[in-house]
Image 1: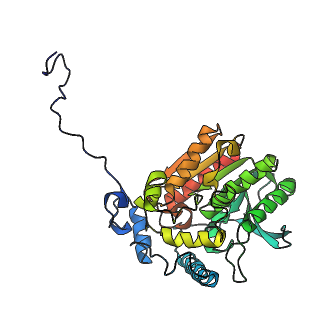
Image 2: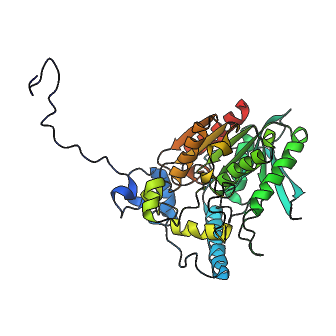
Image 3: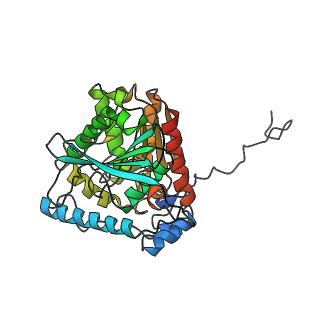
Length: 378
């Protein structure tokens, strides 16, 4: 055979060298910011720009080597900043009718004698039992209130879709009254799960799904891991983890990030700054002794840890520094034979599909529908 084209075959001997694959975000251009990343949803860009969040997210003025009191002061400022943002975000929809959801609060006692508020939402006038969701809010297990404006709206919208929703007021690692590091918040979620399971009939729940975003997804996955270790997995019918914050690796050297979780480099500074997230890690696990403990950082779970788990959904967002750790957990579940569905929300930053309710209304509604469909299918 010659180098000529023969019988429809194309001669590739003189083809030019292959080009490098396109690299997105800061992998392709280290100077890129959200405002000029072409992947970003345009309405989300406008919403972020209104709050000056369309540039590169600022890093902390200190690092994790700072004294505990300085770390606490900084994280308290982060808490206040995000609470202020959540209070100010426009979240109304055009011609929106009242949700018709009832709300009441139960208080249960934690393992440390602490009180755990449970906010219970239900569609008003709904007859008979409904699928149930236990919602665990985000904030890196360290900041944000369970009953703030965004989390309350999310809980109401889930309930309005036809579910009983119980939102857990677990202990953050940072509180105005002092540190409550790992495993305080996890213990509260585990206690709440036990109480809710024991009161399924009273609550009118046909199924019980653990659902959370970001740090809430960490606690959702860790609560399931803890339940499996303790022989209590029968309490959980499904797990729905959004944009999981589960590696604790935000202070890793760049070469390790590129090797294991390149989205931390690709999307660095897109709404979240890795060095800032590392401050939350320093407060959640101050000594670092749990750096590879799956109950603290589920990214380090093994196939044996997750075998036999109930069905999961793992949802990640394209422009999120945390995207690849969620994908890694999805792959782990697949390898272990756990029934799992993966979702990738294109054009969105971290948790935008639950926090930017007005800006990305279609994505928000689709996520609520998916959670309701999942809970109702188990």
